[in-house]
Amino acid sequence: YIDTFGVDTTPRAKVESLPMGIRQTVEITKALMKKAEIIIFDEPTTSLSHKEKENLFKIIQHLKEQNVTIIYISHILEDIFLLCDRIAVLRDGFMIGVDKKEALDKARVIKMMVGRELNQVYPTIEKSIGDVSFEVRSVQRGSMVQDVSFSLRSGEIVGLFGLMGAGRTELVRCLFGVDKMDAGEIYVHGKLLNNPSPQNCIKEGMAFITEDRRQEGLFMPKPVKENLVMVKLDQLLSLFGVINRKKEEQESVKAVKELSIKVQNKNTQAVKNLSGGNQQKVVIGKWIMREPSIFIMDEPTRGVDVGAKAEIYTIINQMAKNGATVIFISSEMEELMGVCDRILVMCRNKMVADVPKNEYEQGKIISYALEGCN
Figure 1 (cartoon, rainbow, N blue to C red):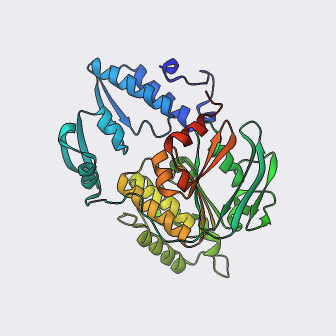
Figure 2 (cartoon, rainbow, N blue to C red):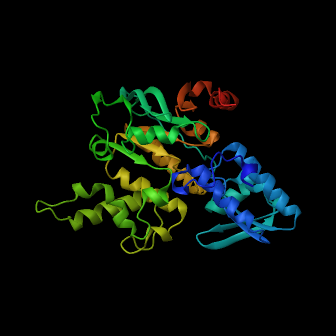
């Protein structure tokens, strides 16, 4: 199975050192090797490249032919209609309905998922583009990020696209100081950011949503309120250095309300018990509470349903309307084209294209991502 997926690694490699996509592939392979009669796939393609996804679908089809029962959980409706014989929809812990694929269409499934008609998945908003607010000059990190330069303006939502391994995540981790860059300069509102580190970036008004919310974005056993105020604790301290509980309560109540986070009790309910969409809203909410001017979002809608996605898009648009600059990384081309003002494309750890909205063409953008990567 590893050969089928074409994974470029060795059996001796530590899983913690592997990119998210390869980790996902290893987990899937482990399940397939057990030769089970019933296999549950829970969002199996969220970190896979297009080719790996195609290979997985071939394996699933082969398993079906071998009379293996497949339970396939996904928020990607195209995949559901391609693979599945029957479709069941859950919402808020209740079974909304089950029917044969032929009896349903995408619009009907979306209505079952969100409980209402969703006429516009990608909302639009009136906003103005301002001056350059974020500039990257010749950033380098070993072979993973090679001489990358670009500039962004206030109010812009800029997509970052590339195939798995193109260097997107490695780049933004450098920009936020999570990983140290070997060379290059970063300017925030015209000011050189010396010694980039998460602490310094936060002080300069930057925020960063990582691609792995469970491991890097949240304290899963902790209550919603504690997660929401995590980044803003220094601003909630009283003159005596203790947390102002009244202000903490006010801020967390505001975040829950504005982001429509579905939680029974924000003071006691652990984040791990929320749905994926509400977990992601908590991740976004903790940063919004800092009112950042530069917002880096790595796969912010991964593993969330179509209703939560639409709500997250609205949040992103509102931030841009308020003057924030948003860097939006996604593996979903349709999403980037629906949300972003322009799309930057990476290939083999280099920036190879800057595509404005009026030139969006899916085949063209993918060809940029493939350039030199065959």
